[in-house]
Length: 143
Image (tube, rainbow, N blue to C red; front, side, top):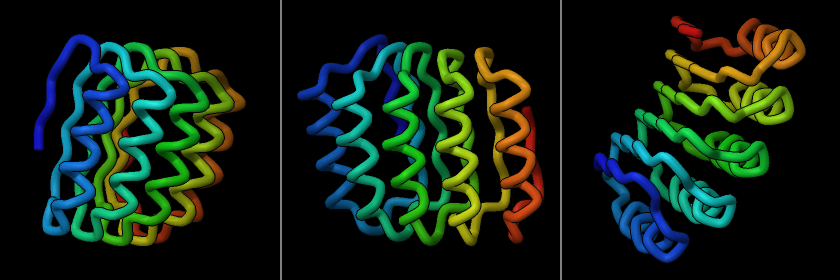
């Protein structure tokens, strides 16, 4: 599934998330939206928990909060086949990066990570570095 939009409403994200939830063979999701609200991201995050075959997630959002990233991070821990994560979320700060970093420790199949986060400082990168060392299947990291 590939979705590209300028802004997606909570109701639109809820509908999109329901489609994901009822697609157990879904392997790839690419979501490119300028703005997703915290509630919209919660719908999406809850949906990917129910996508057991999901292998690749690409998330490109100009405006996404640390709380939304926390929802996403919590969810990726429950996607057993997840191998690749790519996200470009310039607004994510150290807090969001720390949530993501903790989550990748619990993603056993994760092999590749590509990140573009402009607000993340040395603290966020330190947290990420520690998690990279513990991610056993990880083969590639692009920052």
